Image (tube, rainbow, N blue to C red; front, side):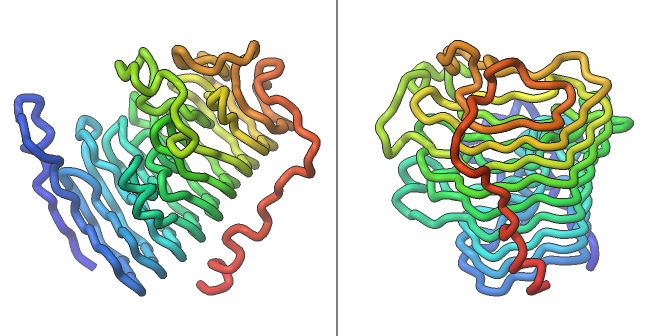
Length: 322
């Protein structure tokens, strides 16, 4: 228990020019059996909690707070870990940052290390500030068998909104993301409902012309078996959702089911990035959508013949263990 103050304020000044990244808060590496619970963390310069290359990680009842203007202040970052449960926690962080992010190394270094993030359950957590709960964008070592369940995004009182469901990666990352579930999620005044895109830090809009073009097979990410279901969002400050894979590596086996969003100004977009997906209707995604309100643009998801993946086994072992 107790409170830890990270003293992050000087690191967020636009006038501060630094040769390196700000330091993380609790950054623990190569642990086997890690338990972080009942602690209040505030004003950390960068990531508040970052387990890396570890297994059997349990994070329970933590309260993380950073101000909306703070930069790079992700709440919980799981980096190349396996057998992870995050539960019953409250996260408020910078408006453009991830409340919870699952990562597995970046680009060539991440691929050479080759340690996946796998067997992860995130449950009964609340986000009051921050852009999203995310898979990626650092997917180079692979991410598989993960579930987010029982998440509440509560951006009431936050003019920029709080939270979205997000899977993000991009050219140059490589790696395979396989088996991701987001279910039983509710939100109020959110940034967006669902964001699935493979154009992170790529394209003309991001000023990175190099990855605006196709790369080698090993540098090209694969994302498959993504389920988003039983989602209810009231009030959206941006698009209802974004779906945009790569033309050379579309999203595979995406299932959107029982999603209801109201109070939005903009609907779904399947051609958000530039140069972006070159398929006629955009999207660059293969999958199905049912009981989705508002509905997706026509042909944003291309149908597929294989039996859809339900993911019922994801997280079951972790729930039984805990």
